[in-house]
Image 1 (cartoon, rainbow, N blue to C red):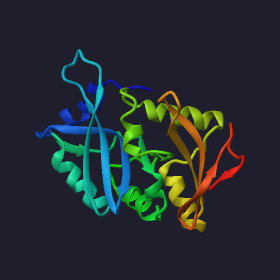
Image 2: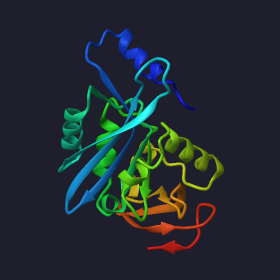
Image 3: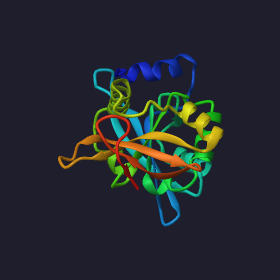
Image 4: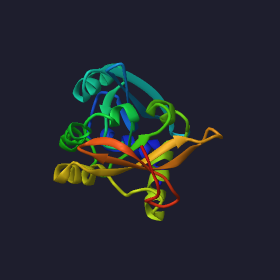
Length: 210
């Protein structure tokens, strides 16, 4: 469900915060040559009569704390993660251990535990994030696919729990299809906290594509 931008800002206005805030609706995490890049989809609303629209800002760093700190420096206002609903991670990020990432996000007071994490196939997470100019389009796609059983229902808190249990997990996968549209791309399979391959098919399951 889409929320008007004014509803996102209202609690902050009522609390008397003087600094402008930058509500983040989604995040994308990539890694190239050992350097991480975090891209934020920031909710913009230039006036009360305008519809909420996304803007994109990026920062680089060695780990997530540094990324968030560097991202806050380039945002026009205070970093506000409470409305973030999706985190996209590239295959390069997923090839490393994702448990520290999940633990850090779960410990952040501003991050909702229902945040959905998805692996992006055949491209960067940033490219897919910027593919749709509608706020919360990704979260709606992942929610709908989870309800229909075509992608795993694995929010952040549940992913952290199963990774701690035995290091295995499954996450939804997305890609840009041949028409340039964001589409489900099977299930990302993790073992020992790292990406080991994908399950393809119309429903959860199917052949393993390593």
